[in-house]
Length: 157
Length: 157
Length: 157
Image (cartoon, rainbow over all chains, first blue to last red; front, side, top):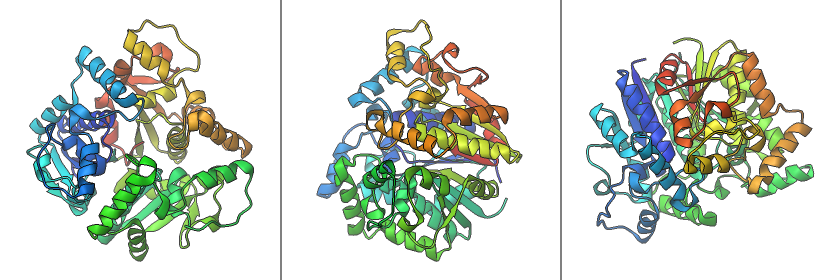
């Protein structure tokens, strides 16, 4: 068992994304090697803000249109109220000088947190590499499991 | 610490069910002994597709009617849109030759993944053994905790 | 690795709260030292039932008003139907003599389960110490991670 922490980030809600990056950066700051495996709706956290022109099937296009693009556009898991709850939470966090999701993601990069996008989920949801942020890796569940088996802390978020 | 993985499957959504069985079969294929403990809404994943005639109280009957019966009828945790999202996801996965939940569950059985239905949750939701698929075990939280304490990988899904 | 179990309780749903306290009390009864770290909506589980007069900003007040106050008022994560599902579940559990959330929380205290409220989440949601139940601790993610790193069982609920 090494000083490793591994997280599956399945949900793409702003609040759960913030929680996962606070745990990830905190764990990395304590000297652990942290891996975050983004799968299903969690992939939306890694999407670029702007629309990227990629060829998609009709259904892939529909999923792509309906899913939020990146940290700016995520809803919260409770009391989202059509985006109002998400706006309220972001406003309060800015007022209180709490790091935003974007800042937490920058910190994660600086602390060498390994960010992996789940290749199978990308295939299912029709998300291409061009649509996701730079500096991340692409892999399958075997890669996740190899990391998880060596990790002291494992979470599914 | 042995080569064991243990998961609590609490949510009964198709997408989370697929994720849990992908992790379970992957971990079992790597040589780990995997236990999945199905509790609360997770029990719906284990329900037989057909209606099973069992005597229930009025409230148990209501829960039973409103909850989905097995892999065919599960919704997804986001963008379900009255079942349309779930249909879209299943359609895409079939098109791309990705294993269905039913196939993943078959593979789990072949790999000797231990599937346990939480006896207390069955009691609360009024689900009887006759309504669940064959080849599973029934136990309480003590059994889960005994497995979890020996497991390298623990997840709550 | 010591005989420790650590849980992040992120969701504030009655069913997930019950699941987390059943696991916590079960693990403590088996001789483990259990820590529960309540963050975001999980804080609602720790709120007192009655309204506590505290000075809040407008937005904090709105969050405070809309979020449920304590075990009596939590909804369930599926089929809540405006609180009806939650009432049904509580009614059935009482009928079957299954411990209520309040009783499970009492048992947790008796078994010395450590309950920590996440200070940052309290700040974001505008929840003050006066609004939460007695006998709990207040700390940040570093405290959680220090416990988690020593724990055999880690869950995010």
